[in-house]
Amino acid sequence: MDAEYNDIAAWHFKDILKVFGAKDGSYKAFQIKTKDEVNKLFVDETFNSAEVLQFIELYIPRDDAPRALKLTAEASAANNAKQ
Image (cartoon, rainbow, N blue to C red; front, side):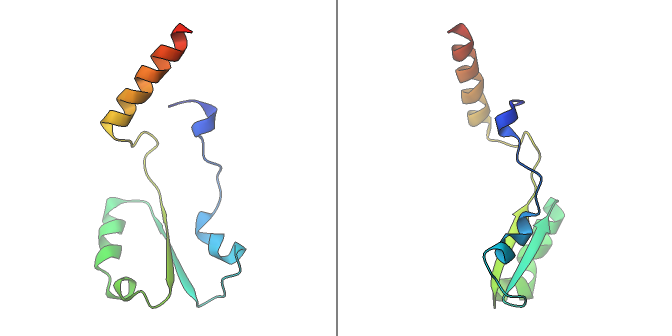
């Protein structure tokens, strides 16, 4: 989990649409950092009408992964350490 290759570069991903030439007013971009913000967005009538392209930059905790994936990663790490 703490390996450097797991780090995601700090960047304003919500601005990616501009990088690809999206014109102002032709899209909406959201940054979501909490469950409450997700819940509010999903019941928002304007968001649900989807009149333009919508992009959501979702922040999740660093160690947020399914238990099975974590166990698999731990087993792989242990196996790799033997070699």
